[in-house]
Amino acid sequence: MRALLDTHTFLWWNMNDPQLSTMVKEIISDGSNEIYLSAASVWEIAIKVGKGRLLLPEEPGPYIASRMKSNHFSALPIQISHTVKVYNLPHYHEDPFDRLLIAQSQMEKLILLTINPEIRKYQIETIW
Image 1 (tube, rainbow, N blue to C red):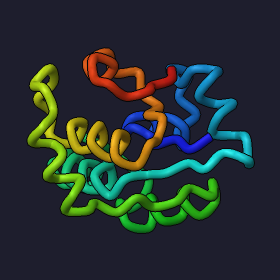
Image 2 (cartoon, rainbow, N blue to C red; image 1 turned 180 degrees about the vertical axis):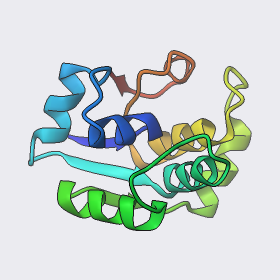
Image 3 (cartoon, one colour; image 1 turned 90 degrees about the horizontal axis):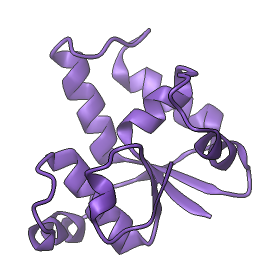
Image 4 (tube, rainbow, N blue to C red; image 1 turned 90 degrees about the vertical axis):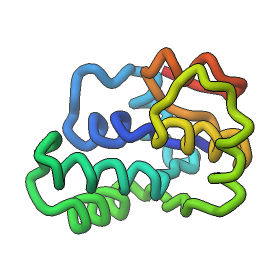
């Protein structure tokens, strides 16, 4: 399985948050799955930490890099084609980071691991 982590999923996984579903825990734990973290999520985390809306035990760069390495997550860069795809998405949800994750999920054929009900309105496969 190829899956894309929503930003909260990445954070909750690394914080052992009880809100993380059993299904998502199993998917992330299964070493045969390819798990991706988007540069959009990294950007979102950096912005939230910078504004004081998210606290991490260390600066975002080292925190994200070490957790990606220890969990064997792959980076998903933002391509121009991903950003253009956002234009074609219906406006069910206005969050720019989520809209970019939706576009990436569609274009890269990735299952999006998210609890967000707004994202589930789009024509992508989600699991929670």
